[in-house]
Length: 485
Image 1 (cartoon, one colour):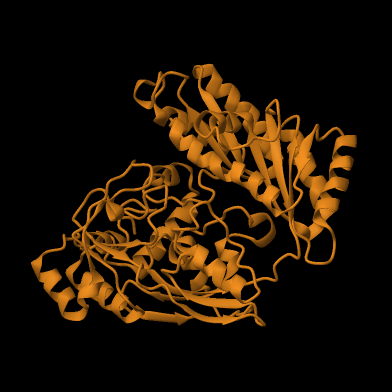
Image 2 (cartoon, rainbow, N blue to C red):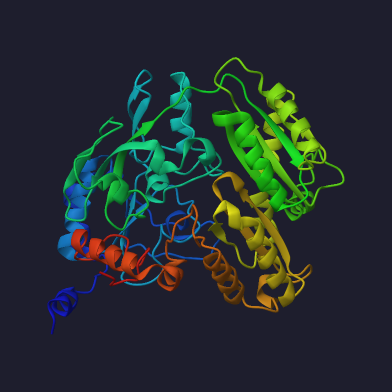
């Protein structure tokens, strides 16, 4: 047997949490760290997965996290890190295998430091995203990561999945917003990496390795994050556009017109507005009749410029070029918030309608229009499916969701969801895109990673997993198939 074969063969199977493990945990943790096993920790938001838990632990500090990991390593018990539980790909729960330790960061929520002059904030990983935003605002600064789940998702989970959200166009994803990390590695050691440096070329970047690893290489316990000066004023416009191709031309025009002041550029399909009218009729829709395609543009200059005036000039230029045909410009913050409420309510409307197959994808900007045209044609050829294509056009992230024909449900769809999902992902791959843009791989997309992933990259990922987590205890079965590495 080769050395590689001996190494793989030496890995012993994981065990379930048993009385001996519980006794060890009780010896090193306070009673407050033990949580009842409930649906909160074992069910993902869409109900696609149900997880298992031998025990749910909520440590209060990094030392307690390290103690848990050391015990789990000795006993060969899996550890599933749990943030806010808002992930949509099953990364926060384990549906099969020996019952693991579910490690929740819910008691580690402190703001450790805030430096407005240095534009940094350091927080424990269990801090709720919205609380971090408010802490930054209290210091006259902006933390720009913005997600629909920001009232319940936690910073550790945001970083573990490299969350994107609404402001990636201007500020980047979670990775770009993080300067330093503190983490407990799979051997129970604590990495003290809470640096506030913008430049640090001292070897391998463990920060970037842990961000996006979905808890498979360690547990993030704290982070130093970037802050920004907030815009002096903000305004938004909802503009009707002829097509996704025209929306892309409009994006290029917006970048030229606004420069760094453009915060978001969202593509909205008419189906999303129909779903809102069907499920949330109380929401006012300002465009009538509803457009087939529209974009929501948000700008916020840092100087003294008037954003509403900037948008008005932009619209005139866009209309003259045939890229916009009507729309509304916000007059004040209340109207701006109303436009964003429409956009941010679309995922909930989708949930109420009931998607057959949801796709969180990314494409090169130059490929988006061709992909949308091809994907819609291929799906429509299969049957009278409803399609809602929307998302963050500025960074190429689309949510391409397919719904059963009107009057039919998921269970009686004429085409299985798996067939639709593979069709869409095959088209994404053909157009040079990614099957996972901002939600991660989790457990839902492990097979997709095997199917579409570059072989050399997958081999490197398995080698990294084997090197850092040789016992395979960290979030088993997430990202890489169980036993990989």
